[in-house]
Image (cartoon, rainbow, N blue to C red):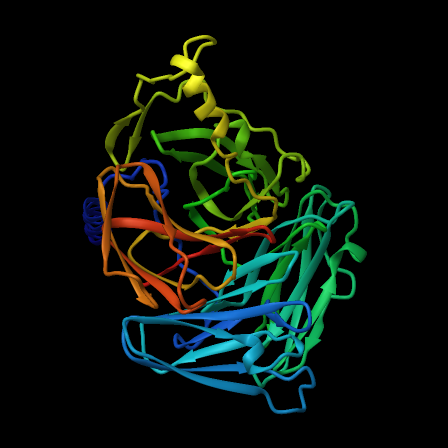
Length: 503
């Protein structure tokens, strides 16, 4: 009898537990969620780490700062000799405001990775670097994971690839660098357990260590201490640099190309199983969801020529059922090696974004001027002949994506590079129209303005030339979550820089 009672009680408890847990959720993975960042160390939220900065005889560089509130900032540049004291500069911003600090005015001694600290916030930092032959730039990083992912390396002929490991802290660090290519993964020779002294950095030419790779990724893991890594790619025409990232299931790229450049998407999966990846394109006419879909196998990084999917320009969202790393790279046609053929969907007409249907406009208007149809005296033909050639750029750019669309963004460092064109790109990946207010910070020729961005499209906001170089930023605010990036394009080259979301 006692045994029967126990069985009944166990049965009742089991039924109660089933009722509380409910039916098994068999829905597909939520592509929009960023997985918890486990096993990471978080840096001081007021400190931003900028690994690739150089001011010397041939290069100029600047730190771009922006803040919503009044802040005091400190820029610390460690000395190449770790036993010597670092160089420190201070600046105050009245919020909301922005300011650009010339690295050469602080110290001009070549490589100068730095740390930007704010006493309040939200406040953010980016960098830009330029010479007569290049433009590059990055957003500085504030989160400091134990494992960094660097995607999109090329060590083939005509490319130089460098890895910088920056330790901004007083404590020494010990790290391991793993390379991942089509042949699998292996620890980088000489980087099995390398020591980086406190407040110092190491720069390694990877073309001598892992030569002749069309597509190679890296994982930098801290065994003790913390480093901030960055990859730098040079093809003799321009230079692209981009910092390490974590992994995510969603990556947004508000910009993928500028006139003259062809975009490539590079994906890397360091998990134990294949990642099912979908690529959405956001064109001026509307979204093309699932423009490409594929399995990204573990330890087999893939490069996708996005021009095979649609005619640029467009923005991109990458969705995956497992955490992956991703970067966008852009260069003139034929520069990047082809390592992953794209397979566009045959039917890209009707699409859905965020649960709301968005349909591409089926009607197109084509305007042509046939021979002999110009007005009297051939005036129309003469006007056409006088049209200026469209501006195109010859450069190399690379940028990690944004894992989360947000409603507020800070964009510093606008107008920093003399003679270059600057634009802000805003992607609206939602199913609702976005009302975006952009407010100039620092040197400004006017007040706030607004732009309406239809669902599933993007907008380019050109930045007018500034009367005083390098003292401008922008506060972007939207009624729906958006994603933001910056392009700097000039005769020297091109740089893509991600915006910094602040909530």
